[in-house]
Length: 316
Image (cartoon, rainbow, N blue to C red; front, top):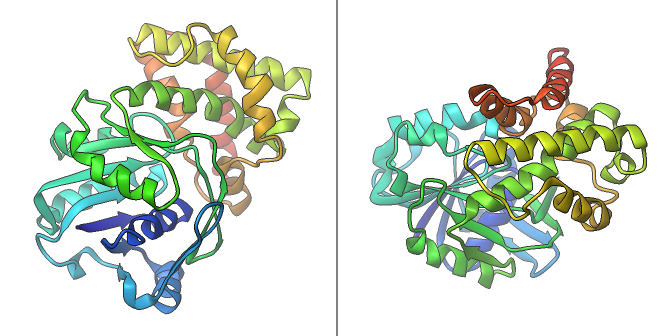
C-alpha cells in the first residue's frame, strides 16, 4: 500500500509515523524547512502511546508534484491547514495520474465541509472526512507529539458513501496505538467538534487566553452560549444532526466536562495568531455564517467573532 500525506504539520507527521509502523510505503508532500528537516532526520511520533522513529531512508519526501511517480498512490491523507484546500484540490486534479484508479482521499482537518473543494474534481466515492480530536503538537519540524487523547479518530463520508473500503486504514492507525474507527455518522461528530472549536478557538485567540479562562468569566460565557445557540439553529434548519438534542444539553457537558478536560489548552487559532499566519476561521465560524446566510438564520455573534479574527489577520 502506498500513502501520500499532504501537509507535514503535527497531524500529518503523526499519521505518517502511525501508518509507517504498519509496514506501508509513505510519502510526504512538504516544502522548505520542513522538507529539509524530514530529509535529514526522518520522522518521529512521541508522547502518548508507542514512540516511533523512522530514518530518512524509510520515508520519501516530495517538494513538487512533478517529482511524484505516476499511478502510485492508493490513499491521500489531507492534513494541511484548511486554507490550502483550494490549491491542493486543484493540484491533485491537475496531477491525478499520480493516483491509482481506485484511490481514496481522506481529509483529516478541523471544520466542516472541507470535502467541498475536492468534490469539484473527484467523485463522492473517492472523498472521505475524518473527525480528529487527538491532540498533536510539533516540538520540532520532523517530530509529532501526541499530547491529548479522548476519543477515537472517526472516518466516514459527508456524502452518504459507504466507508467500508477504508477499514484497512482504521485498522493500521489503531494498531499503531491511536484508536480509529469507521462511522456512518461522521457529520454528527464533525458538528460536535464544530460546536467546541467555534465557541472556544477564536475567542481564546482574540483574548489571548487558554480555554479554561473563557469559562471563568461571565462575559465570555455569554458570548460562547450565543455562538452555541446559533450553531444549533444552523444544524437544525439545514437538516444536519449532532449528538445532543438541545443546546442546553450540550452546554451542560461543555462546561462540566469538555472544557475542564482541556482547561490549560491554547487553541490552534491562538497559535496561528501568535505566529501571524492565516487561521482556519473560514472552515469554523465562517462555515456557520455561510450556512446561516444561505438559510436566513441569525448568526450575528459568529459574525462578530469572525470579523474580529479577520481584522487581526489583516494586520499580518
